[in-house]
Amino acid sequence: MSGLKPSEVLEIWIIVKRLHRLSDAQVRMAQELGMKPVRLLDTEVPRREPLARRIERLYLKRWGKPLPDQVIPLRQALREARASERYPARVESPVKCPANTVDAGAERVRERRVRPLFRGGPLIIDEPLPFYWTDKEETQK
Image 1 (spheres, rainbow, N blue to C red):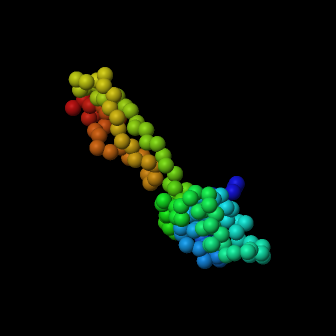
Image 2 (image 1 turned 180 degrees about the vertical axis):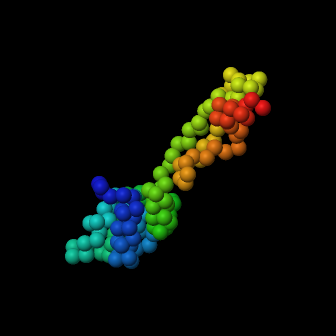
Image 3 (image 1 turned 90 degrees about the vertical axis):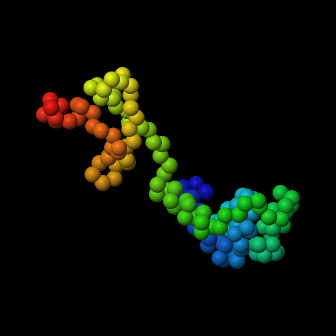
């Protein structure tokens, strides 16, 4: 379904589940069969058998087993989809800065952990400031 977020598609599946009285396993079977939830919302289409029974019959015919291997409840999948939309996975790259030249290992490069920018800018954790970030008075002492 183009143009829809994963959470929106799952919300439509929840409506279909309520409308046709499907279980989470039957919804999972319908997803694996490639059924589109928007088409299943149409109740005016005459059906020979209830949708739940039709899904089970088609799943058994196609995959040769009565139930899917893993069934995740729709509510849990919706929570996870909304969380991944709100906070997308980000790759953390450590900020590298030269070590203090006062120290013996001046040529080494030290990795520093930086918190993401939220309130008040990035915060550098558990590291002393390099000599060029401090005041001149402190370096002369």
